[in-house]
Length: 532
Ligand SMILES: NC(=O)c1ccc[n+]([C@@H]2O[C@H](COP(=O)([O-])OP(=O)(O)OC[C@H]3O[C@@H](n4cnc5c(N)ncnc54)[C@H](O)[C@@H]3O)[C@@H](O)[C@H]2O)c1
Image 1 (spheres, rainbow, N blue to C red):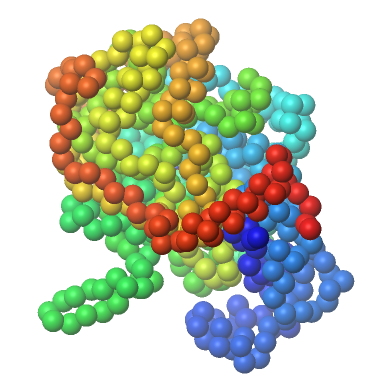
Image 2: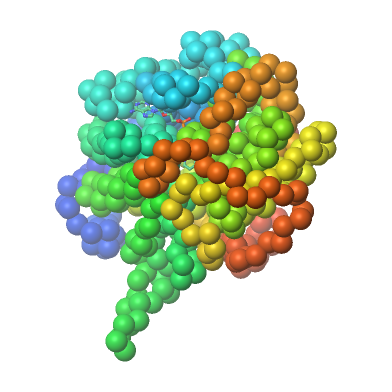
């Protein structure tokens, strides 16, 4: 019985010192040329964790290696050193606790920029979050997790480099960017701030990785919004065209296989992510860095077992127009008795995933590092929904909690198509990384109502209620959007296109998936186990 990454070898392992007896990176050759050379001449490596092995061929599998331990998310490097950039954020903090609970040595940096930006806009996280010192203390007390934290601005390369030298990370998760499209569209200063922070931060990081930890994998957060929503209906492939994609022009044909797919970013924030994509792609090519660029769907929700373990461990949740993502905003509006604000026709389709599922995907990516030089992209999404459909779902769950909710269509301050086809390919996480979504939309929305209806949180939602309705227009205009129509859930006919999520699950024999599930079950309740 095999876990999904059982067959990976030292070639993928960050502990393998690839210089060995030949520094193939210094050759400056293409992957293909290097492969041929390795086949011809062989490549010997050393292991940073098991130096007694001396020089050997990089053929030991994760399943065979005593340093890789089986968990319910695949083999995971024992005490893997994972550095999280942006560890104080919505996702960073949640992932830090999850990785800590799995036995990783977690370190992280943050300069509390998100807290500052939110404060300056007069908003606040509606779920109370604690200062970092208290978060760290609670992580130790409640979950017995030690997190090594440094307050560092990623743009300060000297300080970040020092910390990276000290930690010697084996994986770096880069969440440390400004994550908001509307924030980047406020005005020129905000657009420049977002692009400078995100693009220059990531570019500097790539140079530091080259110098300090070229074997570490970089798991970088991009967004599905990098692709836009092509009106032709062309599928959103996972970053690169598949081998059988063909370009036809004037009677001639070319394979597009392996080329980056076109991007059509939808705000200055999204442009910063596209720029990151190209910089990372190049760094992998020039310096043999390895990276997963995660085209992340919109994340919603509040729950993982670790953040729910103590109020001091909760992660932030924002509902204002700049930092509140759509499902989170709708739940807050329902609790306030405010009709849910759907922009424009509400027929826009986007990709989504619950917080808990997104965290599981990240662990699976960390546990399955790419090969040296490999730039890969995964589309991390578990469902595609129309905005109006999300509003209907939130209204339905709200009714279970005794809220009578209406929906309002408002002017759309963004520049985006009201009606568009949307076909998203997401085959790698389910088929190569063994991921199955576990948290249906309604389940997570229910968990949100359970948490956000607590009286002290309702008070906090009331304080930011006036910041939910948008006033930031892509045109540069500054005025609160007008209501176009108010309707009761279930009374409006849905029109437009039907989204399609292509996972290719059916192409993989069920028996294979069952085998993986049995292997996971054999690990027992806690999910961890010793090697048999
Ligand atoms: N939350 C989502 O739905 C979503 C969807 C798609 C992509 N993403 C991406 O995931 C990443 C994390 O998102 P999030 O929702 O956790 O955002 P967040 O704002 O809560 O977290 C980002 C953290 O990075 C820190 N940071 C930013 N710039 C920094 C710098 N220069 N130096 C040090 N720290 C810095 C912030 O202070 C913050 O704590 C972002 O890159 C975002 O674009 C998020």
